[in-house]
Every structure is written in C-alpha cells, then in structure tokens.
Figure (tube, rainbow, N blue to C red):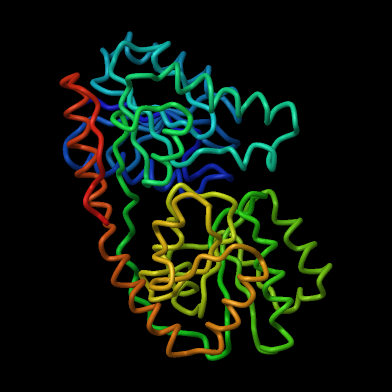
Amino acid sequence: MRIAFLNWRDSTHPEGGGAEKYAETVCAGLAARGHDVSMFCARHPGSAAEEMRASYRVLRQGGRLGVYAATLRRLRAVEAAEGAFDAVIDTQNGLPFAAPLATRSPVVVLVHHVHREQWPIVFGRVTAKVGWTIESRIAPRFYRGHQYVVVSQETRSELAELGVDPADVAVIHNGTDVPLSVTAGRSESPRLVVLGRLVPHKRVEHAIRVLARLLPRHPDLRLHIVGDGWWAHEIRSEAERLGVSHRVDLLGHVDETVKNLELAAGWVHLAPSVKEGWGLSVVEAASHGTPTVAYTHTGGLSESIVDGHTGALVDDLDAMVDTVDHLLASPAERERMGKAAKEHSAAFTWERTISAWETMLRHVVRRDQPVAGTDDAD
C-alpha cells in the first residue's frame, strides 16, 4: 500500500513528544512490512524539506499553524506527480488537516485524545473557543462516515459524546519499546520521576508541589524531570518559589539510555497531566517496574494505569501527595505495584500496534464499512 501519514510534527521538532513517537513508529513499522509510506509534517529551523528515515519518507512544510494548508497543497502535488495514495491518515491533534479537501483517497482520522481541557490552558479565550468549536462541532460532521482510529477506549467514548458514531471508531493502543537493559537499579534514596514534554497541560508543577509537601517527611527525596519544552522556565520558577530547587533536577532532553536509567531508578513515576490519549510514559515507566500516580478523568491514563494494581489514580493534589507518601513509605506495596506494572506493560507491543494498523488499512483500502472494536492488547 502507498500510505500518507499527516502529523503536526515529527520527533526532530523541538516540541515533538508522544504523538510523534507513535506516528514515526507506525510509519517505520509499516514501511518495514513493505509498504510505501510518506509522513507529512511541519518544518522547523534546521530541518530539511524532504528526507528518508528508516525506509519511509518525511516531507516537511509550513510552520506551527501554516502546516495544515501547506500539507494539503503538498499532498495534492505529490499525488499529481506520483499517483494517488491508497490511504491517507489525518491526525487530529486538536485541529484536523481536512485531508478530504485535497485527496480522493480513503482518509483515516487518528485521534489521540479530545482537547476540551487543553484549549483554554494553552491558548487565549478567543482562540480556545474557535479551536474547540472546530474540534467538537465541525470536525465530527466533516468526517462523518470516515474510519477513525483512537488509542484508548476513553477517547472513543469522548468522541461519541461529540457525535462520532462508535461504529466508525477502532481502538489501536500504543505499543511500548522493549526496555533497554540497564545495570543501575533503584536509587538508594527516594526519588520521583516525571517523563514528558514541558508544556502547560502536562502540569509538571504539580510534581514539584508534591515534592515540596513531602520533603518534611522524606528529607532525602528528589524529583528528576526528564524532557524539555517551552514551559521549562515556569517549572524552574515554581521550584524556586517553593524553595525546592536544590531537590529538583531538570535533565532536559536525554538519549534513550539515560531515559531508561532514570525510569529504572525512580521509586514512583508521576503523570499529573490534564489529559493524555494513552500514557506512553506510564507504560515506559512500567516496563522498568516503576508504578505511576496520575489523576482520574484524564483520558487514556485510566487505561494505561490499572488503579490500585499497576499504579494509582487520584482525584486531586492532596490525594496525590497522600498516595505518593504511602508508596514511598511502603516498599512492599511499591514492589507489588511495580511487578504488576511490568507484567501489564508487556502486553502493549509496537508489533501488535502495527499489525492492527496494517489490517485496518487493508480494510479501508477495500473501501469496506468502517472498522470498530479494539486490538486485543487489553
């Protein structure tokens, strides 16, 4: 199959994160199975307009918002020069690409999560209202009858609330990389770890507040923050405001070896995000036997975490502080959860994810009725 994958960014972009990891792994996996894959995404300083990576092609055009119109123009030009794609994957990261305006090929809509909560956090009132109107009212009508793919049952339910027919929605869970074997184990002194992009809706400040409130009971406690982003200065400011800068390590962007070392060393992983489509960092931490504490009602985190078994879901900051306090003071409970988390994470492989995508795309190319249901990773 010839497949076009439209995504806001790629992992080389300064703001790349879990959605980019998902897109690139699926592209590489499909290409490895012999399919002709082109990924369309935004340009950024220092990036090439076109390059080959892991046997699939990357085509970059446009900037933060200009990528949408620029990608449609380039998609149309590529199809005119090379022939139509068999399928076009249109990633709706808040805003969709509106791919049906540029192609007659079958279009699959990929949604990681609904952005109801993120719009007012990241943008001003007017922009947030426009964005949410497009996402919640216009897009469901525009894509009616198209095949949807989501990464969690929670996102499937949220789309149903917006008017998307659940019969059009397939659930294909994220996979997880096989964890790198690391020689170092848990840190000797208590350590919290956060993994993710440093942007407002990840609410990394909550992890700093947890640290500050627990230091009187756990004076050796440290917080390691793995990741970078444009919100880093606000996170540093919060640590300074609370007087805990000396107990916080902002590691920035790190390579895979350091990332795995940090996840393996942490006693508890925190995911205080407003919303996640799945929770890739949760399963990555789990693959090292590190349980996660996150908030309830935050999308796919309620699926990547089995509450009370592989981690804990809490209602507010006070409950997060109490739960982390309990886990830090209870080695047996941490070990029990960590073991369960590691076993749970083993079910979510990228091979399973890519196989599900390949099967679904073949169905779409035949122009059958949309596929519903889920992969069997749960």
